[in-house]
Amino acid sequence: MVDKRIKQTRKKQQSITEKPTLAFDMWRFYLLWFTVFLCFVVLVTRAFYVQVVNKDFLQNKANANILRTEQLKAMRGVISDRHGVPLAISTPIMNVVIDPRDYFEAKKQYEEISEKIKKEPENARRLRRELPDKNLNLDELADIVGMDRASLKKMMNDRPRSRYLVLKKEVPPQQT
Image 1 (cartoon, rainbow, N blue to C red):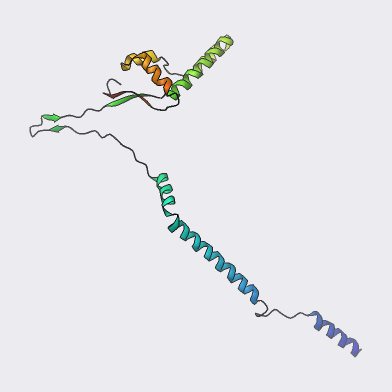
Image 2 (cartoon, rainbow, N blue to C red):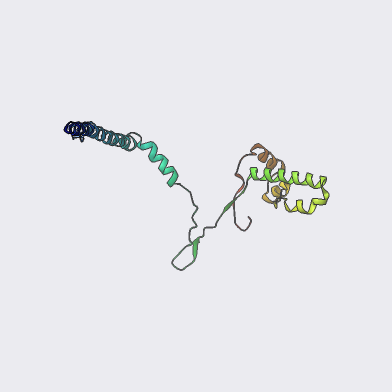
């Protein structure tokens, strides 16, 4: 029976593993610190690249998102002498412009809906509501602005994708 107990205690001693010591886990400790150090080096390198090497590109990109320059025409006040008589009066002026792309899109839409009305006269009322609410008569516009009709049509056809075409400059607001 004593032999049996000795065998059992030997089996228990063999089955019990030793607890890991600090020396046994040292490689894990070094691996963890190496990983942390590597991440730190990557972050510092990236910060250096962004702030020193690639500074101008990123600064210009940020300024493009934030800053914009617009020229605003300021209205001047009346300049008068000491008796209150006006010496100089500034008058507001405007430019008469047209958007050729918008004009041609509206004209195309008008022609398409006109064709549908011819094909489907029973839906004419509904289709007329879809017509663009714009005056598409360039001859009338040329007469109002004081331009030659042919030159206005030529200007429009030369720049069909333009978004801004000046027809007349420095027009008082009462005439526009």
